[in-house]
Image (cartoon, rainbow, N blue to C red):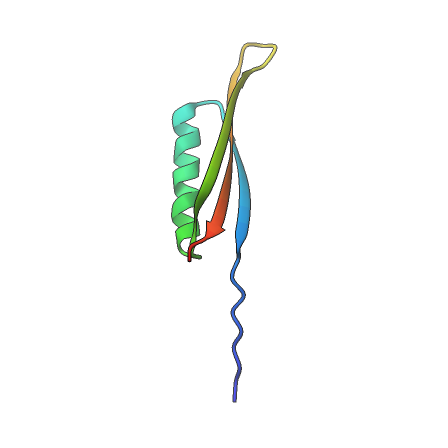
Length: 69
């Protein structure tokens, strides 16, 4: 007799960055779709925008995924 034990990921934090806000949104949307397959949903999102000394704009985000119950 085979016994299977499934361990689910409870929490996952992912970091994203881009020089364009639309690109950042696409990256996050893609990862949301991937994580749905392993039963993770978005718990919270934190984001920032900063400008380098050379004037380049960067957008960053941290997305906390949690297991859907």
